[in-house]
Amino acid sequence: MTHRVLVTGGAGFIGSALVAQLLEAGDHVLTFDKLTYAGHRANLGAWISHPNHRFVQGDVAEREQVIAAIEEFRPTRIMHLAAESHVDRSIAAADDFIRTNILGTYVMLQVAAAHYDRLEGAERDDFRFLHVSTDEVFGSLAPGAYFREDVQYQPNSPYSASKAASDHLARAWRHTYGLPVVVSNCSNNYGPRQFPEKLIPLMILNAAEGKPLPVYGDGGQVRDWLYVEDHARALTAIADKGRPGEVYCVGGECERTNMEVVHTLCALLDASLPASAHRPHAGLIRHVTDRPGHDRRYAMDIAKIKAELGWAPRESFETGLAKTVEWYLAHHDWRAQVLADAAARLPETQHRRTDGSMFEKRGSL
Image 1 (cartoon, helix red, strand yellow):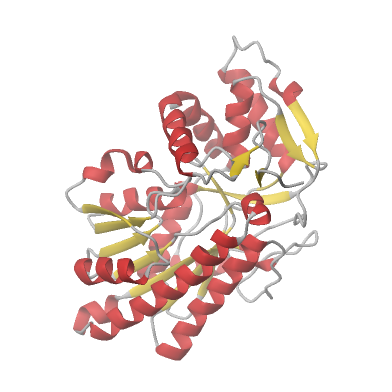
Image 2 (cartoon, rainbow, N blue to C red; image 1 turned 90 degrees about the vertical axis):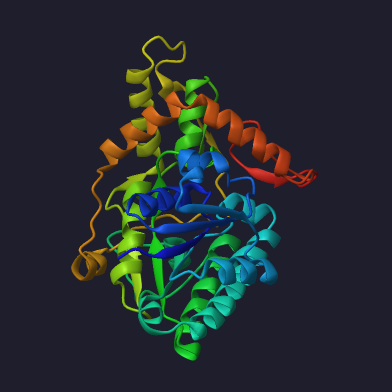
């Protein structure tokens, strides 16, 4: 069965991988994206002109824009990925996170509920609103513990607090208004087309150019790494088979410390760039002041999605990371384009340090 799927944030890193998979499956897709610094038409590649695909530049926090898109496209699925997502940016300037992640989710839920009330028959039975969230809402884990769907929320950054609030809104719209909402909480994603400020692409690109590799604190922070294509498959499975009102944790079962990630990347780059003047690339590692409120460990228990929906990650960390390094080294044009686009879109009061380690406002201490 094919669907009409509205994907918010579909020109972003995870969203573009999802859009590609939906179109490959024969669905009709509307990508609704504000095109902020991390959302780019280039992420969609040739899919942007696919006959089953439409693109609308819009803001999830602008009610009239959302109403127009939904009324014209009449989706049978809404997959809500649009979000401000970089923790450093939320620490420096939380305003956009509150607006997009909280107000934007509220607008999407409210307009979707009105749309759902007008649906009938099979379209109404099939309708789902998938709210895509993060494991960061759960806070930090002790060794040996795991995030599960029933873990108490303890967000520790403006970003994770804004996502926690949006998760609670999604739950409320299910229980108060009957909207068939499903929520997913995922671990750290990596893979092609991730904006270069994130850990893995930043390390790849800095190392290739002989720039410092900034690692927060001692680098002992642990994350569960999930390859983006695996995540996109999980989202489709949740939208197809997930039970309304339920939450599904999605992870890669690949726990690594940040230092392990960086050293693995350096080894891959040493092999991929044998003529590089910067080998061994591990010599570029520099420890920088730790991020305020930096959670020490995240790890997912994905037993529920495995048992109920039959999903499991296909990529190991080693295979996924090798594919990621290969992609970034082969796509210099993509990097140049998205960085130029991002620089043009950022407010004049905002910038990144030259080593890429932190985003801050000009004039801040």
